[in-house]
Length: 220
Image (cartoon, rainbow, N blue to C red; front, side, top):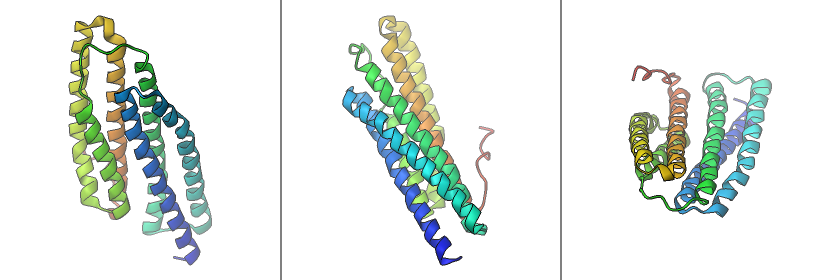
């Protein structure tokens, strides 16, 4: 590996980790905004998505530049390919955070709901999966990445439980259906973020071991 390419790969790694941190913070803040009906916090998340989009473009351009100028092979090529895929997933994590932020703004316009639907367990497992996926990237930790893949089933189960609870609440409190639908929408976004965290974890496994595991549990 030439010193110049090594420098470019290090720069790419730092850019990717920076985007990871911004995307994670956006998710945490979006759920906080929804839980507290904090319109100002929701607004900052929507505005901040422009930064995520800008960085996503910059990372893609950096990847393409490395491929064109240095023609990396083996582990270096896998890293650039992985960076391209993770970059897209992280941008989509940001998009889901924005969706939650918009729902926070919508919820703030409604009266208090007559039923409490607990999003906390799904929120916590989603945050943990995203954090573990990013840590597995930082430390190139395949066992931690495998833990994320295993946790995805639990996230899906929690989302289905919330769906069943919200459907029952809609039947019992039809006058509050608008707010209940917003809760279901947040659950869908959280479950989608957990899927994206799983994608990132699977990309880490590909980066370290060269093994494609993305479709190995599709039969479930």
